[in-house]
Amino acid sequence: MTPGGIRERVRAELVAEITDTARRHLAVRGAAGLSVRAVTRELGMAPSAVYRYFPNRDALLTALIVAAYVGVGAAAREAESAVDRSDLSGRWLAVFRAVHGWALEHPHEYALIYGSPVPGYVAPQDTAAPASEVVLLLARIAVDIPPSGGKTMDDLVPPELLHDAQQRVGDVLESLPEAKAAALGRLDPAVVIGVIDAWTMLFGTVSFELFGHYERVVDARAAHLEHVARACGRAVGVPGL
Image 1 (cartoon, one colour):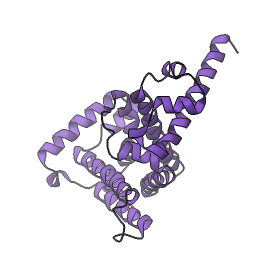
Image 2: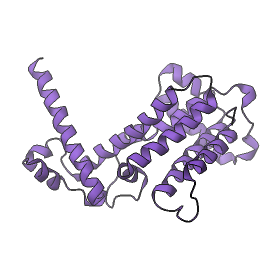
Image 3: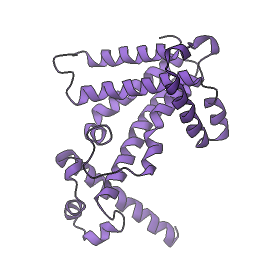
Image 4: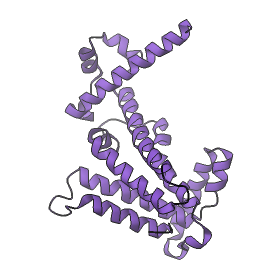
């Protein structure tokens, strides 16, 4: 391995060690209590060494936020890809179940990205792409719905929302490879709104469970999530739900 390659490997290992330690601090102190100096003390490093990689708390928070979005997106993508491509309902349900499972296994990381905003922190633009992975995955499933399987929802969606959907489709297409862009470009704007509704319901349902809002209200929470997934899928026109 070349000297440059060794340096890159050492750097990657050090960054991973810093973020792993910060993740443990997050579980104990919460995002607002995260401190670069506290992380460096636990690692036995000089603050100046860590500041070369994370110049301030916000940079460290951003790294944790991106990692959390990547984690939940990877879990959803892996579960969805394990289902036969023709089984649209199975793929749709797999995304909901995987997000739910990941959130239960990583509650503090989930709270970082879907809990209360961290005072004084403004997320940079580079968090937007990983944050959109799950909703794009749902959209790709919607692209595969046969024409006869979709529902006409234009008359149910306010015109201003249809305009928003057309704008969002345009934004997404600009960031995708040509083949994927062509597929997503076929989505009816009303179906796009249905996918956004499903995304909202998915994370809203998971958040209500993790943050204690279903206490003495919903006990069968996995079954409730399944119900929500099926209802959202039917609204979009996913066959078999």
